[in-house]
Length: 333
Image (cartoon, rainbow, N blue to C red; front, side):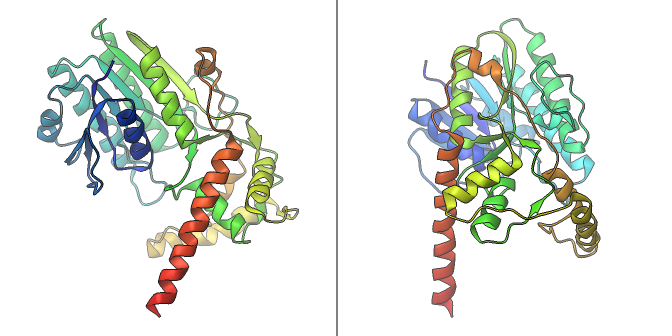
């Protein structure tokens, strides 16, 4: 059934892919985002504003059948604990209260595997144990959504917990990894035996559509990660293969890398600059982030893109933007 769907954070990386797929399926989309969109799409409109602005949120609810909540504070540098909770918890609260006032019965929250904290080999039954403000704030948002759904037996709440998401137009963790490997600047930290669950963005948004169409009343929670789950050294080897780079044999012991990274931690605090090499990132790189997602597959979901396909698309995009950046630099000289 075609619906009017409100998407918060629609101008972001995942939001743009999700909006495109929802429109392709014949839905009408209204977005809320603090970042304006310049592209003109049939069936799409955007309200420029903040989800913490109750008047903006109330205005956006007119004739809406379902809400997909993507907007969040999620950077890992320069954000205070209060910022995370202000946006991720309080923003969700405003949306839920106005959804209730507008008699909207379906709410989809993009949460995160960060709610599991340092735990590995998780599934949806694993008890949350967040170990940073971002994960704690997303768990707080989940609890609000769960309470909202329990308040009316006709409501549907779907919570999606993606692992790290990659694809064209993202410049987050996997992009940094691809860039370093493609540019011949990557050095392995640790032995690479830790598992890194990842998700290609087109698979994630397809999974979102799948659960929206599949799930009826009540509360449903889904992890999302692509398969197979790879160890870090396997992922690096695949990126090398796809990008045409030589395989990487040398690695730096984790303890040495963390010690070196602490210099950039201190420098970042003084300068306010977000360095790509930090002690925290070195630890994170060598930490297992293994999150299973069998639940959605038992319902029949099949990802259309393999991890290798996704990496090929991502690496091709990176090479294109690198070429364009180089050409623009040359033309300005």
